[in-house]
Image (cartoon, rainbow, N blue to C red; front, top):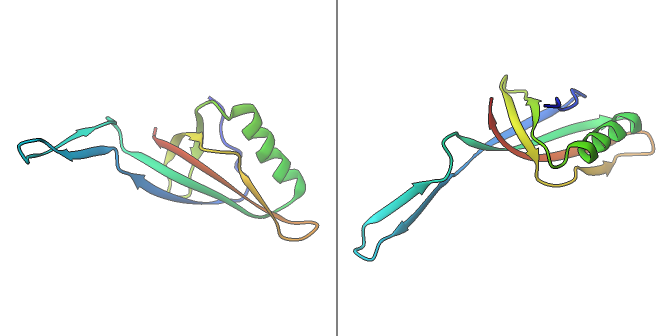
Amino acid sequence: MAAYPSIGMRTVVSPVASMIVDTAVSGAVRGIDLSAEDVFEIEVIHPFISATDRNTIISFYTTNKALIVALDAADGNIYDVMFKARPTVEVVNATWFTVTANMVGNIQ
């Protein structure tokens, strides 16, 4: 499993509900848990990085977009994650960029 690049970043980790709840014909509430593990949406933000670092992240995405990768997040946990989409690139100026990757996964 590839490790997500450790280029200066901050992470926002949010739990995702894996429970689907509905009401039976009798009116009783019922639910099913779709995941044995807790699932998280993780936003990885690389603020003010160089074009070289930007290209590293985009290249990593291109190579691993359909694979599970290991992410060492700022909260001290390592997550097994997949990309939800191609990372977005914000041009700060001609030299600096902010790259944001959105992922979903669980704790290793």
